[in-house]
Image 1 (cartoon, rainbow, N blue to C red):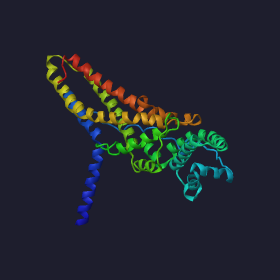
Image 2: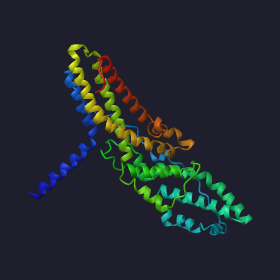
Image 3: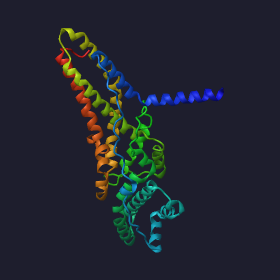
Image 4: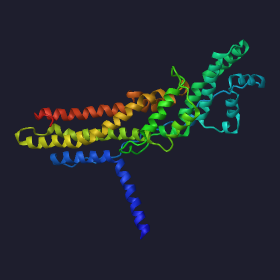
Length: 340
């Protein structure tokens, strides 16, 4: 008996979670059903949206980096810059098995250590050697950063489009925002790359562990566009609606349905999706700038998700919201009705 009760509770919780993530679709279903009822017709059946473009494979995107090594005597010079510990750790068993994120952090901290040492050095011979080493290693830093963004497992998982919408409370957003804010600041192409400790980097990166918020946000905006498009196709019936005296009562009922079910419910949900993407969009654009040799492979993904507010995912959604509003404005004007 107890097992049955536990199983029932678990099923109910699972169903509640699913329904929580289907709020937008259910709202569109209700909205279109109310409009259809006034028009005395069947509402459209909202199908699942088409699949979103995926993130290209890691091997397709990763860039090979040349290894720069120095002799023992030269390496010992790094002791004067307090970099020997960092280098030893990187070349040890743990360092050699690190993922792309910690590898980038090593090269970033090494480069920043070189810059500090150069600024403080009074030894001409050391300064000359450090300058040559910097000239060799600095051009490689953007490649290590790029490899981090497309190969670090938790970042790659976060960037992967999902096939489910975000939770109603947008849980996972803040951790996603914090992580990509840091990544954007760390981009070597940024004029002032932030000095960040490994602990801070690890903490922010850990916020992406099992956090699919960004991929779910992609899907939510994409499905919103799909539902808006389906709604617009259905609302073409408003063009034949009789706005004469005999149809005035039904015209008011249609206006009320739009205001109650779309503006007060659906539009509120869309506003939240819009607001969260607008905050993330510039961070994605700044973080996902591929090297020239990977631009073609990354072109579709960037066009869809990482072109700021010009991202196709967002522009299509915005265009459809405007077209939906225009359809109702045209109807209200033709029937000589003002918004309630």
